[in-house]
Length: 312
Image (cartoon, rainbow, N blue to C red):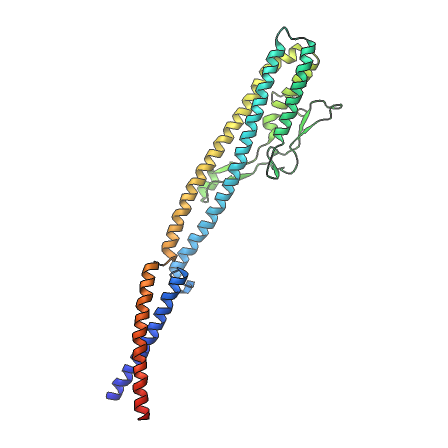
């Protein structure tokens, strides 16, 4: 009976020593890694939740990056349209001055030189790039969207080289957001500024500027007087699109702010799922070290007793 009890005690001591070793190892792993679990098998439910959170973080992060790029592009387009708007206001001022009864053919000819420069300036602005991509050519971002014609063949004519396809970005990652939250990040420039070759009579920037320059050079009273109203219409078209782009940018900035707060909440949730409480883990590790020392001492005593029995 004494021998059986002794054997059971010996086994208990060894089992306690093994458990103490495992507990210390686990405590040290948690402190060093900062994570509660090492593999999915350690806590499958917690790991599954952590994976779900990580997927949401990845998707949200990509949406934020896309939104930032889109907002930057849209802000630049709005800025360019504001500058073109100012050019058109200057053209209207020239038209008003040239429509004055005191303006003669020579003064109008001189004014036509400035008007022609305003046309070239508008083409340069409309061909602005954001990074390596042109802004006003639809999805055709690799070539200048507007081309100023040959002065001998098509003087002061501007043609559109872009397309009418649209690129969009989404403001969220739920089906509801995908359906209602798409924002266009491309602009078909001829819808705003016109095409002198395809729509020469349109009251948009390029056709109107062409008619005005030619009217000044030919001393055409009717063309010069009509230019005043045409420029008003062109300015209104540009201003309306600029306002829409401003609303798009504000919407994207708001989306970015909301999604960044959402990502912060997700990170807190992930931390609660994955991360270990370091002070508690350190305390647990110290306790495990003490228990292991006690267990080791008991194991040494056990071995010493065993040696005494066997060899004495």
